[in-house]
Length: 176
Image (cartoon, rainbow, N blue to C red):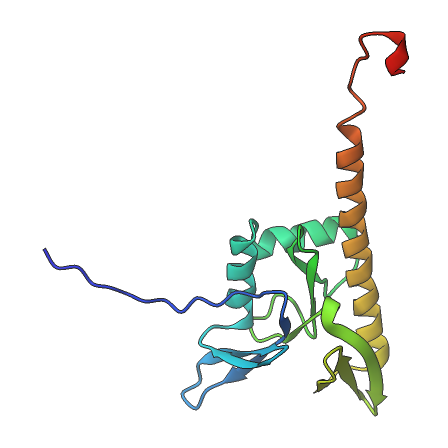
């Protein structure tokens, strides 16, 4: 019996991922560049596949995370996605989240945003700068959506922890 060994270089989004930048190869294939705190990594997958694989790795799915964001941010568009709720790791789309070639930035790594005409420059905490073709105002609103999403999940986790003690019955009066 013959066995074939396939080595998959699966890359997931980690806490050191600052941005995912899509790019097309000379042959027309969609790949991604992971901008990490200590360099760049080239991935032979679309940003969508990379996000979905990462969501699955952390216990969810891209579609599930987007559906959850829709329920929290009702009526909003271009929603951020929680890649990992326990790590509170949230990615902000720079275009439509449904397009496979959308660039994404990590909420946690954004230090500040500067305007540069119709574009904006994202200043990351490690002093790296990324110019993107989206206005500062639009990017700030998307950043605010991500903050609201993270805060909502934090609040829900806190409520869940507090509810555990609500159903206890004391055996005697001293425990009240």
